[in-house]
Image (cartoon, rainbow, N blue to C red; front, side, top):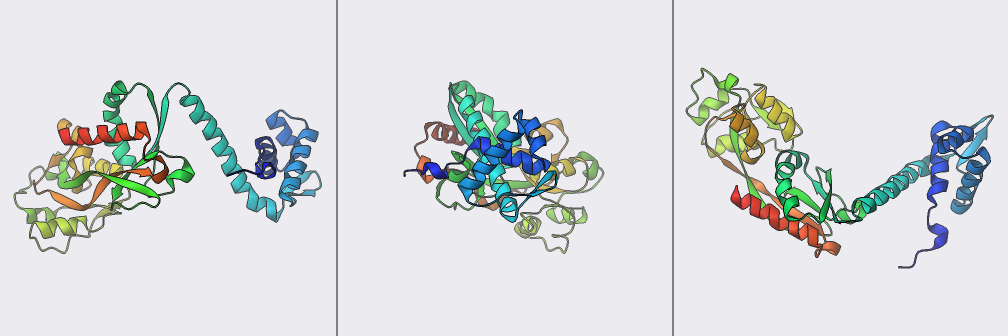
Length: 298
């Protein structure tokens, strides 16, 4: 595809526009950018000429965004952020193969990062750029090479490769269960339950698996991230259904205990997602193979 030079944004003009919009003053923008007032004004006029719309209205000694300016400002900021990110990625990957990975927040913090030293020792030529994402997005548009996804193997314009299924077990802090007789699954219905907002039926499924009828399946505190639910369980706020691989440290330290060993396989799985245009990305494929090998070992 051939790009029209008339449509390529000039970052200097965008910076002058964004700064003047933020300060409501061309003079202040010049001070911030270390430019003269006349230079900032000229760059804004050039941007307006390029766009064919006025971006500001001059009110006394201030500049006020026009309607077109208000609509354009978020996009201008996004372009500036993307430009900076491109430069930083190029600098980070100048002497290495850069891999941009999106991962689920708790999976990244609790499993992936603690294991990464082994991967980087085996692949010192790879530099990682990791960001947290909780839901599918356009990998190509945001410049990612791969993503870790929990759910069904469905992602637009991308291929999903199976990593593993998830199994959750009921855990609690020793303080919560001390002195209680918790020998049968039905005993757990007497304790406060903790819920993950994205999996509201987890306890109902667990009690159904254990052949327990109870009205308590949906009662209790709710959290939108595993990280907070792990902390809540450790603080004694209630029982939580959690994957063992996320709470290895807490189990080893005795901060959490498996109350009744009745594991529940969840209906979804973890997948390694790669955009269709990058299926042959060497570093991404190496990371996928390594993750699968680690999962098999554990």
